[in-house]
Length: 153
Length: 162
Image (cartoon, rainbow over all chains, first blue to last red; front, side, top):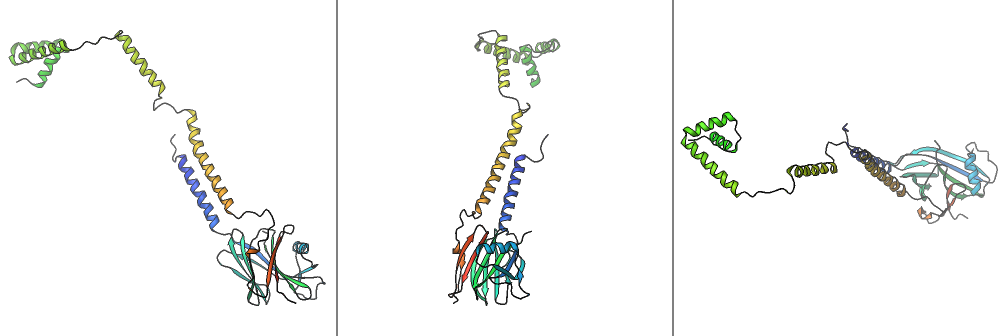
């Protein structure tokens, strides 16, 4: 029986589709679901401030494993979707703001602004379960932390 | 005037290729037509001359054996080269399939490997990548470190605050 389409033509078409699909996948960065947390670290007990919340136990354990402070409290938390179209600014406090850009291939560029001025810029690949932390010391032997992570789906 | 058809009949008669009726008709024509008779004699003389000058080739063996050798040679050649209509051997089908499939698989593997290698490699060691950090303010400095245990990359910003 004569085949309608020769096999080599099918193979060629399949290869072309595969290459095209691979190029499309690589050329279009996927959206990233991110979470940014502003955390305050201290060795004192939790102050009487209703805005402060306990940090997730997993994040707290990680911070405790690296830094010297015993207690970590969440000042603000923002969940957002980062597309490839444009960088996104997220306000963490009255004085602190971050700008995140999706560079593709799970890489992000994170900029930290303090009082409107860029304090630091960091480019990093971010993976599930990993934390990207911008941190600095604060008065009375305390510290601030901006914790960026992928939202677990 | 003798027609071309009569000329052919005369030649055929001379070669002994006519039936008895046709031969009789030609003989009657020769008896009454001088032109036909003249042409017939001319053809017969030419035939005699050619037959006398033609080389006689003698076969080294009998004609039957000679032609049987040719027939066997033709049959042998036929067996060596299968005819166009002969059914395809079984191996041809899978060879036609495996060759492009193998090429396709190799190409797909190449694409996958190329894509994988085009991504930034995973760090073998927890190296500091502080070159990707920018701290534009003069009154601040920063350094980066990574904790593999905590799966955490930290950029510590020092504002030189006393």
